[in-house]
Image 1: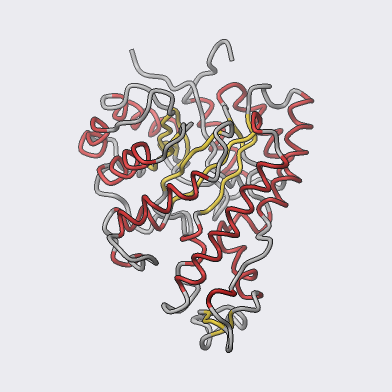
Image 2: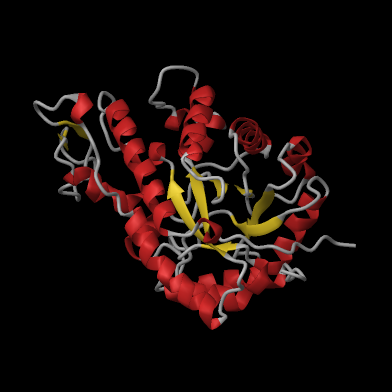
Length: 350
């Protein structure tokens, strides 16, 4: 009998006009398939880390190191330490994630009270790892300083989110993107900011930022190969690196992990891609979500990827590879949500 997933995961950005619309539309379409839901990252956040670039540029501890890489950009370019600034004095103030989360949580509560969302659903806050934000924005000499200061600021954001939102209602997701590319051998992203072997440093950093999330708050990870113009930086040749990083997270993060989400390229319905999942070692309570939903081949392609995956993974939910906002119109988003619903079933008793 074909495997039919019971749960759906929304990675982060959704591509609808507002958080209120995301809660209403996704809740009514997907119902009990959802265990958690983001606000869809509307406005500037639909471009993921790009909305942080003005904040980096406005920081008085840094200044432009030279002309912008793109001549059409007048204010954005690589940053260096400002003249006379000591590395130990550098800091970042409010990043905006906690502020956005507090506002969206009120829309979440209203949607749940109306019955648009099931009572068990948690409010999901998806955050980029600090490495993702600072990579490529600073000259090499300033990167370690910016990385350490931005990491401290991001952990303050996590603390503020957890102080303002009841833990039983909250899930925090780390978006692990450039680290995933490095783990899979991409020299283009090989600019690790700490001394030591890159894979070791990646695990240490994920451990550190994960420890900041209280145990009563759900913790998840989105492993990503990028979504620039709705395309990956590169497609993995198989799931081996994905499984290796998932296993490393499971082995070294000393707290419960609610879920891990991983991408699946549209053209992979073969055993060669999914076979590495035979070696996946997640704890019994950790859910796995596979990014098998694609707009281009719809329910037919989804069912082929589900069938291929089910030969190597006993239980999993479904999702898109990445967020649904960048380079996607509301019509495409509605189609993607319909594919999720058609390719899964609501669980009973939730």
